[in-house]
Amino acid sequence: MSTATNTTPVIQLRNLAKSYQTGEVEVKAVRGVNLDIDRGEFVAIMGASGSGKSTLMNVLGCLDQPTAGNYLLDDVAVAGLGRKDLAKLRNKKIGFVFQSFNLLARTSALENAELPMFYSHPLISLRDRRRRAVQALEQVGLGDRLRHHTSQLSGGQQQRIAIARALINRPELVLADEPTGNLDTRTSIEIMGLFQELNDAGITIVMVTHELDIAAYCKRIVVLRDGSIISDTRNQTRRSARVEIAKLDQAEQKAKLA
Ligand code: ADP
Ligand code: MG
Image 1 (cartoon, protein in one colour):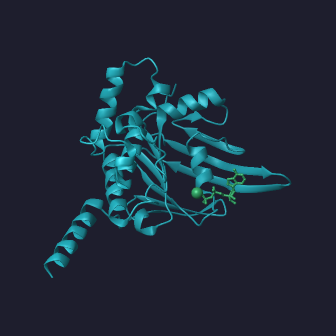
Image 2 (tube, rainbow, N blue to C red):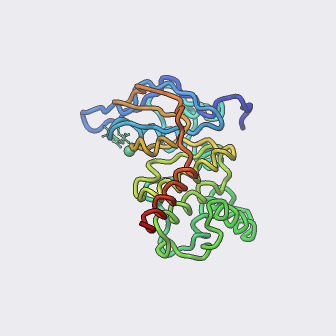
């Protein structure tokens, strides 16, 4: 399907625009965005509420088509694709993580993690599907919670299941929209640590956040305002989640002894 080489950016946006027509009113949610994201990047998309972050992510995730401009995903022009091809491309290349986890209730970690494979690999054997799901859950540190139901797990653990589910098809690209929005500080840093590990293993990550403290863990920060990019910078002072967690542990230890 793709002839992309390793040096082709995973994402290439050219004058990308997305408008919504609601009655008489046209909302220009994304206005002429140009952006290249290379393999192995870890990008934070920031901006005030209503600046177009989710709209841009929906287009990047092939959940929605732009109204103008071009989007090349791994050198494949997304704009020309119909719904079926779009879904195929999405399943193959992209994993999604959301603020609200979007897991099935009363369903085990395993079953949640393997869900995308029913669409992407309908003919795979139950055993192979299970094996892949176990692998993905081990990768996110939940190897000991395979049979637990969603409701028996903490928010951080639920988000880990969602990340395992996003990884199940071995995507090139993980898109996350406010993945730490419902989590406390320590758990948020732990999730950023997991993303940093996945990124170190070669997965490209694009993540929406409105918290500078969270964007600090990314390699690059893109800021949107009113649908346009107003800044795009390398993060020279990137935080390591492992270091920050160790600091938290130390502080807690000290507080206990005091
Ligand atoms: P953010 O995620 O940064 O908060 P959004 O992408 O959700 O921003 O929204 C950008 C703009 O587009 C906002 O003005 C919002 O009201 C509008 N918008 C988003 N989704 C829709 C929709 N489905 N229909 C109409 N307008 C929308
Ligand atoms: Mg949003």
